Length: 327
Image 1 (cartoon, rainbow, N blue to C red):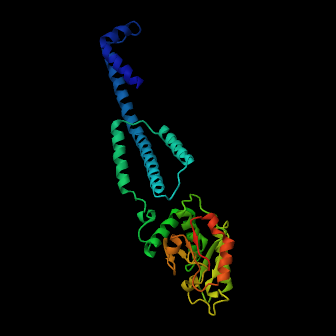
Image 2 (image 1 turned 60 degrees about the vertical axis):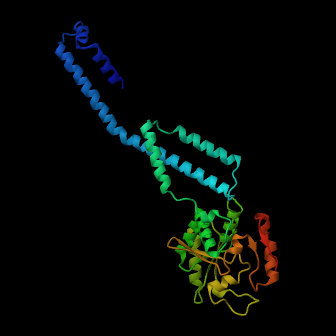
Image 3 (image 1 turned 135 degrees about the vertical axis):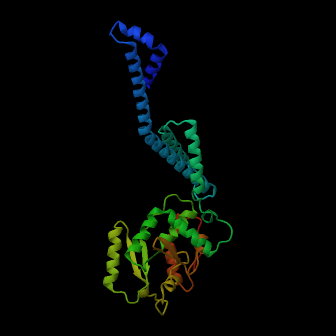
Protein backbone atom coordinates (compact mmCIF):
# COMPACT_ATOMS: atom_id res chain seq x y z
CA UNK A 1 0.00 0.00 0.00
CA UNK A 2 2.88 2.38 0.85
CA UNK A 3 4.60 1.56 -2.44
CA UNK A 4 1.38 2.27 -4.35
CA UNK A 5 0.99 5.63 -2.59
CA UNK A 6 4.60 6.59 -3.36
CA UNK A 7 4.15 5.62 -7.00
CA UNK A 8 1.04 7.78 -7.29
CA UNK A 9 2.84 10.70 -5.63
CA UNK A 10 5.74 10.57 -8.09
CA UNK A 11 3.29 10.31 -11.00
CA UNK A 12 1.68 13.60 -9.95
CA UNK A 13 5.10 15.29 -9.72
CA UNK A 14 5.97 14.41 -13.31
CA UNK A 15 9.20 13.03 -14.74
CA UNK A 16 10.75 16.45 -15.39
CA UNK A 17 10.47 17.57 -11.76
CA UNK A 18 11.83 14.26 -10.51
CA UNK A 19 14.72 14.53 -12.97
CA UNK A 20 15.54 18.08 -11.83
CA UNK A 21 15.60 16.96 -8.19
CA UNK A 22 17.87 14.01 -8.95
CA UNK A 23 20.36 15.91 -11.16
CA UNK A 24 22.00 17.41 -8.11
CA UNK A 25 22.66 13.97 -6.66
CA UNK A 26 23.22 11.69 -9.64
CA UNK A 27 24.06 12.22 -13.27
CA UNK A 28 20.93 10.53 -14.64
CA UNK A 29 18.95 11.17 -17.78
CA UNK A 30 15.22 11.85 -17.93
CA UNK A 31 14.74 8.64 -19.92
CA UNK A 32 16.36 6.66 -17.08
CA UNK A 33 14.02 8.28 -14.57
CA UNK A 34 11.02 7.38 -16.71
CA UNK A 35 12.25 3.81 -17.10
CA UNK A 36 12.82 3.47 -13.36
CA UNK A 37 9.36 4.81 -12.64
CA UNK A 38 7.69 2.43 -15.10
CA UNK A 39 9.65 -0.43 -13.59
CA UNK A 40 8.44 0.58 -10.13
CA UNK A 41 4.84 0.67 -11.36
CA UNK A 42 5.26 -2.82 -12.83
CA UNK A 43 6.71 -4.15 -9.56
CA UNK A 44 3.84 -2.66 -7.56
CA UNK A 45 1.32 -4.15 -9.99
CA UNK A 46 2.90 -7.60 -9.81
CA UNK A 47 3.06 -7.42 -6.01
CA UNK A 48 -0.61 -6.42 -5.83
CA UNK A 49 -1.69 -9.26 -8.11
CA UNK A 50 0.43 -11.76 -6.19
CA UNK A 51 -1.07 -10.56 -2.92
CA UNK A 52 -4.56 -11.03 -4.31
CA UNK A 53 -3.72 -14.50 -5.60
CA UNK A 54 -2.20 -15.74 -2.36
CA UNK A 55 -4.53 -13.94 0.06
CA UNK A 56 -7.78 -14.70 -1.75
CA UNK A 57 -8.03 -18.33 -0.60
CA UNK A 58 -7.09 -17.24 2.91
CA UNK A 59 -9.77 -14.54 2.98
CA UNK A 60 -12.28 -16.93 1.46
CA UNK A 61 -11.49 -19.46 4.18
CA UNK A 62 -11.88 -16.79 6.86
CA UNK A 63 -15.27 -15.76 5.53
CA UNK A 64 -16.33 -19.38 5.15
CA UNK A 65 -15.43 -20.06 8.79
CA UNK A 66 -17.26 -16.91 9.85
CA UNK A 67 -20.39 -17.93 7.93
CA UNK A 68 -20.20 -21.42 9.41
CA UNK A 69 -19.87 -20.03 12.96
CA UNK A 70 -22.71 -17.55 12.51
CA UNK A 71 -24.96 -20.17 10.93
CA UNK A 72 -24.29 -22.65 13.74
CA UNK A 73 -24.92 -19.95 16.36
CA UNK A 74 -28.22 -18.90 14.77
CA UNK A 75 -29.38 -22.51 14.42
CA UNK A 76 -28.54 -23.26 18.06
CA UNK A 77 -30.34 -20.12 19.20
CA UNK A 78 -33.43 -20.90 17.11
CA UNK A 79 -33.54 -24.50 18.33
CA UNK A 80 -33.21 -23.35 21.95
CA UNK A 81 -36.05 -20.85 21.54
CA UNK A 82 -38.32 -23.45 19.91
CA UNK A 83 -37.61 -25.96 22.67
CA UNK A 84 -38.31 -23.30 25.30
CA UNK A 85 -41.55 -22.24 23.59
CA UNK A 86 -42.67 -25.86 23.53
CA UNK A 87 -41.99 -26.15 27.25
CA UNK A 88 -39.35 -28.85 26.79
CA UNK A 89 -36.50 -26.84 28.34
CA UNK A 90 -36.35 -24.02 30.86
CA UNK A 91 -34.03 -21.13 30.01
CA UNK A 92 -32.28 -19.44 32.92
CA UNK A 93 -30.37 -16.17 33.21
CA UNK A 94 -27.13 -18.17 33.20
CA UNK A 95 -28.11 -19.78 29.87
CA UNK A 96 -28.79 -16.38 28.31
CA UNK A 97 -25.48 -15.05 29.61
CA UNK A 98 -23.64 -17.97 27.99
CA UNK A 99 -25.36 -17.22 24.68
CA UNK A 100 -24.42 -13.55 24.99
CA UNK A 101 -20.76 -14.33 25.74
CA UNK A 102 -20.61 -16.76 22.84
CA UNK A 103 -21.98 -14.09 20.52
CA UNK A 104 -19.46 -11.48 21.73
CA UNK A 105 -16.52 -13.84 21.33
CA UNK A 106 -17.65 -14.87 17.87
CA UNK A 107 -18.24 -11.36 16.51
CA UNK A 108 -14.88 -10.12 17.79
CA UNK A 109 -13.09 -12.69 15.65
CA UNK A 110 -15.04 -12.09 12.43
CA UNK A 111 -12.95 -10.86 9.45
CA UNK A 112 -13.75 -7.47 7.89
CA UNK A 113 -16.02 -7.70 4.88
CA UNK A 114 -17.32 -5.49 2.10
CA UNK A 115 -20.98 -5.00 1.26
CA UNK A 116 -20.67 -7.54 -1.55
CA UNK A 117 -19.14 -10.10 0.80
CA UNK A 118 -21.91 -9.43 3.31
CA UNK A 119 -24.58 -10.02 0.67
CA UNK A 120 -22.89 -13.23 -0.42
CA UNK A 121 -22.81 -14.34 3.21
CA UNK A 122 -26.53 -13.65 3.60
CA UNK A 123 -27.33 -15.65 0.47
CA UNK A 124 -25.13 -18.51 1.63
CA UNK A 125 -26.80 -18.58 5.03
CA UNK A 126 -30.26 -18.51 3.46
CA UNK A 127 -29.35 -21.52 1.33
CA UNK A 128 -27.95 -23.37 4.33
CA UNK A 129 -31.04 -22.61 6.35
CA UNK A 130 -33.36 -23.90 3.65
CA UNK A 131 -31.41 -27.13 3.44
CA UNK A 132 -31.15 -27.68 7.19
CA UNK A 133 -33.53 -30.06 8.92
CA UNK A 134 -36.17 -28.51 11.14
CA UNK A 135 -36.80 -29.76 14.64
CA UNK A 136 -38.92 -32.86 14.53
CA UNK A 137 -42.45 -31.59 15.09
CA UNK A 138 -43.68 -34.96 16.32
CA UNK A 139 -41.16 -34.70 19.13
CA UNK A 140 -42.19 -31.16 19.96
CA UNK A 141 -45.94 -31.82 19.94
CA UNK A 142 -47.22 -32.89 23.34
CA UNK A 143 -50.86 -32.63 22.31
CA UNK A 144 -53.11 -34.45 19.90
CA UNK A 145 -53.45 -38.20 19.52
CA UNK A 146 -50.99 -40.19 21.61
CA UNK A 147 -50.59 -43.33 19.54
CA UNK A 148 -47.94 -46.02 19.77
CA UNK A 149 -46.72 -45.25 16.24
CA UNK A 150 -46.26 -41.56 17.06
CA UNK A 151 -44.57 -42.39 20.34
CA UNK A 152 -42.13 -44.80 18.72
CA UNK A 153 -40.89 -41.94 16.58
CA UNK A 154 -40.72 -39.64 19.59
CA UNK A 155 -38.78 -42.22 21.60
CA UNK A 156 -36.27 -42.72 18.80
CA UNK A 157 -35.82 -38.95 18.46
CA UNK A 158 -35.26 -38.57 22.22
CA UNK A 159 -32.61 -41.29 22.20
CA UNK A 160 -30.94 -39.78 19.14
CA UNK A 161 -30.72 -36.43 20.92
CA UNK A 162 -28.51 -38.09 23.55
CA UNK A 163 -24.99 -38.69 22.24
CA UNK A 164 -24.11 -40.83 25.28
CA UNK A 165 -27.09 -43.13 24.84
CA UNK A 166 -26.41 -43.55 21.13
CA UNK A 167 -22.82 -44.52 21.93
CA UNK A 168 -23.99 -47.13 24.43
CA UNK A 169 -26.52 -48.53 21.97
CA UNK A 170 -23.64 -48.92 19.51
CA UNK A 171 -21.53 -50.65 22.17
CA UNK A 172 -24.33 -53.15 22.77
CA UNK A 173 -24.83 -53.65 19.03
CA UNK A 174 -21.17 -54.58 18.55
CA UNK A 175 -21.36 -57.06 21.45
CA UNK A 176 -24.14 -59.15 19.89
CA UNK A 177 -26.96 -59.13 17.35
CA UNK A 178 -29.77 -60.17 19.69
CA UNK A 179 -29.02 -57.79 22.56
CA UNK A 180 -31.52 -55.15 23.68
CA UNK A 181 -31.30 -52.34 26.24
CA UNK A 182 -34.25 -51.93 28.58
CA UNK A 183 -35.17 -50.46 31.95
CA UNK A 184 -34.16 -47.02 33.17
CA UNK A 185 -31.98 -46.37 30.14
CA UNK A 186 -35.18 -45.81 28.13
CA UNK A 187 -37.67 -44.89 30.83
CA UNK A 188 -35.53 -42.20 32.45
CA UNK A 189 -34.66 -40.62 29.10
CA UNK A 190 -38.35 -40.08 28.31
CA UNK A 191 -39.25 -38.87 31.79
CA UNK A 192 -36.29 -36.47 31.85
CA UNK A 193 -37.33 -35.14 28.47
CA UNK A 194 -40.97 -34.65 29.44
CA UNK A 195 -39.92 -32.87 32.65
CA UNK A 196 -37.66 -30.51 30.72
CA UNK A 197 -34.49 -31.67 32.49
CA UNK A 198 -31.39 -30.52 30.63
CA UNK A 199 -29.10 -32.89 32.55
CA UNK A 200 -29.87 -36.60 32.41
CA UNK A 201 -30.76 -38.37 35.63
CA UNK A 202 -27.84 -40.70 36.52
CA UNK A 203 -28.34 -44.42 35.97
CA UNK A 204 -27.39 -47.03 38.56
CA UNK A 205 -26.77 -49.56 35.82
CA UNK A 206 -27.75 -50.43 32.26
CA UNK A 207 -29.95 -53.46 31.72
CA UNK A 208 -29.13 -55.53 28.63
CA UNK A 209 -31.40 -58.47 27.82
CA UNK A 210 -31.55 -61.23 25.24
CA UNK A 211 -33.48 -64.45 24.67
CA UNK A 212 -31.60 -67.69 23.98
CA UNK A 213 -32.71 -71.10 25.27
CA UNK A 214 -29.44 -72.69 24.11
CA UNK A 215 -27.14 -70.07 25.59
CA UNK A 216 -23.98 -71.27 27.29
CA UNK A 217 -22.34 -69.72 30.33
CA UNK A 218 -19.12 -69.06 28.41
CA UNK A 219 -21.01 -67.18 25.70
CA UNK A 220 -22.86 -65.09 28.30
CA UNK A 221 -19.63 -64.26 30.11
CA UNK A 222 -17.80 -63.34 26.91
CA UNK A 223 -20.55 -60.86 25.96
CA UNK A 224 -20.42 -59.32 29.42
CA UNK A 225 -16.63 -59.01 29.23
CA UNK A 226 -16.93 -57.33 25.83
CA UNK A 227 -19.43 -54.80 27.19
CA UNK A 228 -17.19 -54.02 30.14
CA UNK A 229 -14.15 -53.68 27.89
CA UNK A 230 -15.81 -51.29 25.44
CA UNK A 231 -17.49 -49.21 28.16
CA UNK A 232 -15.64 -49.90 31.43
CA UNK A 233 -17.23 -47.00 33.31
CA UNK A 234 -20.71 -48.53 32.99
CA UNK A 235 -22.24 -51.00 35.45
CA UNK A 236 -23.62 -53.52 32.98
CA UNK A 237 -26.42 -55.95 33.84
CA UNK A 238 -26.78 -58.78 31.30
CA UNK A 239 -29.68 -61.22 31.58
CA UNK A 240 -30.91 -64.06 29.40
CA UNK A 241 -34.70 -63.74 29.67
CA UNK A 242 -35.15 -67.37 28.58
CA UNK A 243 -33.71 -68.40 31.94
CA UNK A 244 -35.73 -66.00 34.10
CA UNK A 245 -38.23 -67.61 36.48
CA UNK A 246 -41.03 -65.80 38.29
CA UNK A 247 -42.33 -67.65 41.37
CA UNK A 248 -45.92 -66.57 40.69
CA UNK A 249 -45.84 -67.78 37.04
CA UNK A 250 -45.72 -71.53 36.28
CA UNK A 251 -43.88 -71.43 32.94
CA UNK A 252 -40.86 -69.55 31.56
CA UNK A 253 -41.46 -66.89 28.89
CA UNK A 254 -41.58 -68.26 25.33
CA UNK A 255 -40.05 -65.13 23.77
CA UNK A 256 -38.35 -61.86 24.61
CA UNK A 257 -41.58 -59.95 24.01
CA UNK A 258 -43.39 -62.20 26.46
CA UNK A 259 -40.55 -61.71 28.94
CA UNK A 260 -41.05 -57.95 28.71
CA UNK A 261 -44.75 -58.50 29.48
CA UNK A 262 -43.63 -59.92 32.84
CA UNK A 263 -41.71 -56.80 33.83
CA UNK A 264 -42.86 -54.90 36.91
CA UNK A 265 -44.61 -51.96 35.23
CA UNK A 266 -45.73 -51.01 31.74
CA UNK A 267 -43.45 -47.95 31.47
CA UNK A 268 -40.39 -50.14 32.04
CA UNK A 269 -41.51 -52.95 29.72
CA UNK A 270 -39.77 -51.40 26.72
CA UNK A 271 -36.59 -52.46 24.92
CA UNK A 272 -34.50 -50.77 22.24
CA UNK A 273 -31.63 -51.93 20.08
CA UNK A 274 -29.50 -50.53 17.30
CA UNK A 275 -29.28 -52.41 14.00
CA UNK A 276 -26.84 -50.87 11.52
CA UNK A 277 -27.51 -47.45 13.01
CA UNK A 278 -31.31 -47.77 12.95
CA UNK A 279 -33.17 -48.01 16.25
CA UNK A 280 -35.77 -50.72 16.82
CA UNK A 281 -38.33 -50.56 19.63
CA UNK A 282 -40.02 -53.50 21.35
CA UNK A 283 -42.98 -52.45 23.53
CA UNK A 284 -45.62 -55.16 24.16
CA UNK A 285 -47.81 -52.75 26.18
CA UNK A 286 -47.24 -49.82 23.85
CA UNK A 287 -45.69 -46.51 24.85
CA UNK A 288 -48.75 -44.58 25.99
CA UNK A 289 -48.12 -45.03 29.72
CA UNK A 290 -44.46 -44.12 29.31
CA UNK A 291 -45.23 -40.87 27.48
CA UNK A 292 -48.25 -40.06 29.65
CA UNK A 293 -46.01 -40.30 32.75
CA UNK A 294 -48.13 -43.14 34.13
CA UNK A 295 -46.70 -45.95 36.26
CA UNK A 296 -48.95 -48.99 36.61
CA UNK A 297 -48.27 -52.70 37.25
CA UNK A 298 -48.28 -55.13 34.36
CA UNK A 299 -51.20 -57.61 34.35
CA UNK A 300 -50.62 -60.53 36.69
CA UNK A 301 -47.53 -59.11 38.39
CA UNK A 302 -47.25 -59.85 42.10
CA UNK A 303 -48.83 -56.91 43.96
CA UNK A 304 -46.56 -56.93 47.01
CA UNK A 305 -43.41 -57.08 44.87
CA UNK A 306 -44.66 -54.21 42.71
CA UNK A 307 -45.57 -52.00 45.69
CA UNK A 308 -42.23 -52.69 47.36
CA UNK A 309 -40.41 -51.70 44.19
CA UNK A 310 -42.39 -48.44 43.94
CA UNK A 311 -41.49 -47.59 47.53
CA UNK A 312 -37.83 -48.37 46.95
CA UNK A 313 -37.50 -46.43 43.69
CA UNK A 314 -39.26 -43.29 45.00
CA UNK A 315 -39.60 -42.05 41.41
CA UNK A 316 -42.00 -39.24 42.33
CA UNK A 317 -39.20 -37.37 44.08
CA UNK A 318 -37.16 -37.20 40.87
CA UNK A 319 -40.10 -36.85 38.45
CA UNK A 320 -42.95 -35.10 40.32
CA UNK A 321 -45.35 -35.15 37.35
CA UNK A 322 -45.68 -38.93 37.45
CA UNK A 323 -49.02 -40.59 38.14
CA UNK A 324 -48.21 -43.74 40.10
CA UNK A 325 -50.83 -46.45 40.54
CA UNK A 326 -50.62 -48.92 43.40
CA UNK A 327 -51.34 -52.59 42.88
